[in-house]
Length: 191
Length: 191
Image 1 (cartoon, rainbow over the protein chains, first blue to last red):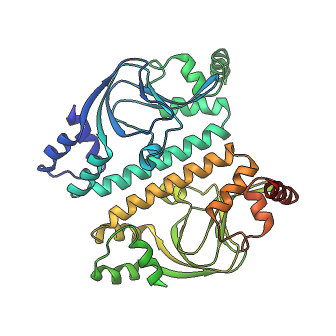
Image 2 (tube, rainbow over the protein chains, first blue to last red):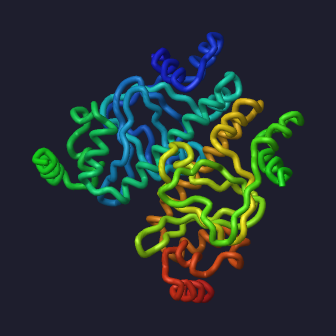
Image 3 (cartoon, rainbow over the protein chains, first blue to last red):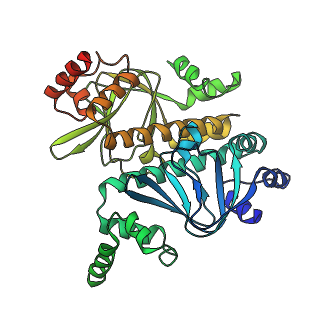
C-alpha cells in the first residue's frame, strides 16, 4: 500500500530513506463500502485520502438532484480541499462508487509532514497548485461548457473509467438526463 | 517600498536577516498609468506583482460587456494565478483603476526565492492555499449569489474601497446596471 503512496510523493519531491518510516507512520489505512459517504455535505473535511483501491464521485446535493463534477481514482488524493483548508462545512459530498481503500492523513499530521521532511513544504506547494488548477478548470467548465464538450472532457480526463462509472453518473457529470447521453454518443460517432 | 513587501512576507514566514538582500534583489519596481492593462486577456501572466500604491480591477471581457470579479489594492499580490502556474493564455484581464506601482517577480526568480530561502516553500504553499480559497469563493459567488448578496460581499471584502472605485465598476462587480445599484442601496438602507 504505502509503496504506491511513496512512489506518488516521489513524483513531486525527493524523499530521504530515513523519512520513509515517518511518512508511513503519518498515514492510516481506512476502508469504505460501495455507496458509502467519504464526506457528507455540511460536514468539515478533516482528512486527505490517497486512494489505493476503488473509485469515488464528488457531487453537489440539491433538493431533487445531484450534480456530479469530479471523480477520484487509484493513485490520486481525495479531499474537499477548500473545506479542509478553511475548516468550514463542505458544500460538496464525496461518495464511493466501488469499495474504497485510502491512506488517510489529518491536518495535525500533515503539518508534521510539512515540518519534519526536507522537501515537505515543496510537496505541499506543488499539490496545492495542482488542486488549484483542477478546481478552477472544473468549476469553470461546470458553468460554461456544453454537454458535448463535457463528454469530451470526461473521455480525455478519465480515459480508463468509462466502463467503471455507471451511466447515470456520467450523464450527471456532463449535465444531461441519462437518455440524452446515448443520443450525444451517437451524434459524436457520426462525426 | 521593499519594507512593505518584507513586512507582508513576514506575516507568512520568518525571514532571516541575510535573506532580506536576496529578496530585495529578486523584485523589480514597475509602474502603470490609470486605465493601463497590467494583463490582457489572451496573454500569458508572467509575473506576480505586490501592490505598493494604487488599485486594479480583474475582469472577463466579452463582446459587449466586462464582468468585474475582483479588486487588488495596496499590500496585496496581483496576478492571474492559473495563467501564471500553467503558462497558458489568461482568460481574464487586469487593469489599473488608479496609477499603480508594484514590486514584480517572474517565475524564474520566484523559483530562486523558493529554493534559496529557508521558509520560501512554506510561503509558496500558504499563498497558494490562500489564492485557492479566494478563487473558489469568488468564482462560486459569481454564479450563485444575488446582486444584494454580492453588494454585501463587496462592502465586507473591500470596506475602504467604496469611495475609490467608480460606481460603474461596483455595479459590474455585483452584476447589475449602474442605475440598479442605487436602487439596491436605497432598499438596503430601508431595511
